[in-house]
Length: 363
Image 1 (cartoon, one colour):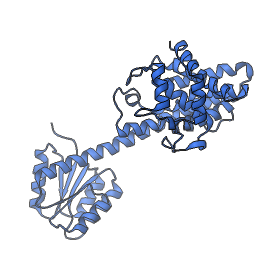
Image 2 (cartoon, one colour):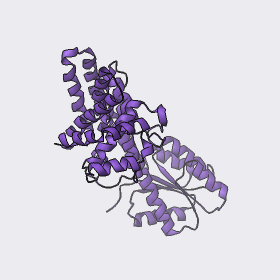
Image 3 (tube, one colour):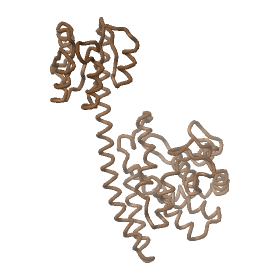
């Protein structure tokens, strides 16, 4: 099946352009144009978008580096492979520094050429795909943020008698952002009770306990901006997927910022910092020790406990005793140094209550 990728071969030697065109045709690329110099080539590039330009460096008039520079400015998605009979290292360095995908020396190695073409096109596809993903994500976040801001506006105006109802509305928005499975509602309730328990043991006032326990379940609100194929993936995330997953902390924080509500101010701090580790190895900012807000430190431990205990699409559940052992002794992912020493002390003091909460609210 012929490819729809548009190619442009540029060389002042017609024999070379003919050979490269035939080879590209043999690879399945039928939409191949030719140009004998850089000026003609840049005119063609401006008229229609080429996926890939393959150009000689040393040509009469404007050379291939000039063409590369012009092409990168007018058509940044167009990939460029430089081909030359010169093995001057300075040409190679200049080409790559100005944005060329590859630098090939004549006579061409056919397999190397084939590999370079396919890699350049794959690189172009990934760049376009990533840009579209970012645009879609920004629009999705914008829409969800607007929905949330409307709810927050109403929450700020609400009096005491309807406060609980509006908080429930926020919780329901949070449900859509979590794992999107039957476990989510129970997870949110458990987080509320875990955090309430620890806040009480830490000496919080009744008002402070209510605020932090109501705010805690909104810690993963930013997952509304994470695609399902990453959020619910059963296997290990790739480095790119893991990077996208980690953005949920910043997405959630940005969705919650700017509110006059104490609940949402605390929720904003929690959303941003509940994956920060006490030893500075967490994300998104790598905060260390007491630079991590206490609310974030509390929710971090509670979330780790509940995640270990819970069955997820990508993992089995772990019993209470083993979970406590992992939190206190560590495993491949979790280390005691990740947690605030004071919060860890409170957890060990109340771990039987954690077990009860998990059992009582698992369905």
